[in-house]
Image (tube, rainbow, N blue to C red):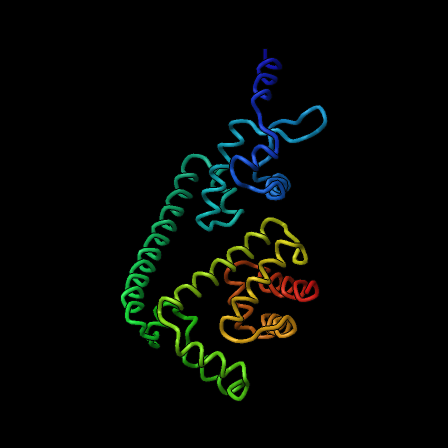
Length: 261
């Protein structure tokens, strides 16, 4: 009976390709989840291919939701494997994280609404606007240091001229774009994508094009910029605070993209 029930359960199981297509998770990511023990398929075909049962798919759906909320894989694994009071504690912490995220998003919506108002008049963004958008990322001391180091360069002049004409809504768009690029770098790193692989290099190219919104950034200059992410502790901390190993990964992906070009 047990063997028959197991066989019947496997008849409705899905292959890696079917799971990837139905839930929008790449095959490489599924293999990575299997390797780290986050989601191991319950069955195998006679040829050795992975098979995912309904219970496996339910666990994967939880993983997908938590990843979209920005939870690290280690924390997701602890949450899904917890039981009893430990599970309650995990859920409470995750609820608090989600509520904080919601408050952040509400604040962003309010900022965008204010930007839309200003956009109708074409008013350039003020320093207060930039501080509201970028938070600690906009610092008067950093601005003064940057001007002292690069104030006599063409790229600094380009950056200042373009920035002076940019509205708050345009700065909002730049911030959203930069956050999306960082999130994609993190996702690629956690999925085990090599820094010199197509996915990471494509993200690096988007990063370069984002820099070009401020000033000319050919691939050789982009390579030098990437080196500064490791040479300057402040840049390194910016990436490492988001994900351990991210600074090196971004630097290597940018170098690989420059080599490709």
